[in-house]
Image (cartoon, rainbow, N blue to C red; front, top):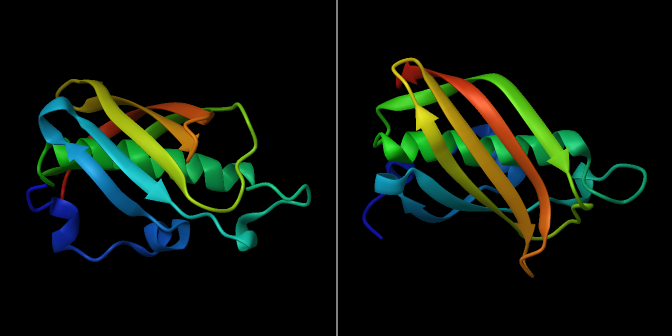
Length: 135
């Protein structure tokens, strides 16, 4: 894989908390794959990862898809975020797959899915985001 925009900057604290790990990026297609490592500190009383953390993982998959597509020139600012929780997320490694579905001059339409390591779909999300210049 060619040098990534993400390798040139330190990960933000929220990405570190989620255990963000770049797996692959396809800038020309507006797609990205990211691993997360939810921990026991993210569990709800039922012993599964609390929904807010799941939403954050999906959000932190979709946004980087736009960043990758633009080589870091643009970043998204979420306008809305819609999440569907399909199966419980457990501690361990999960895989996020995000993509830019469409983009105009000022708004991008994004989506992401979160899978367990066996390929089981756990959650999915869509988002509209205002496109901002980086920096």
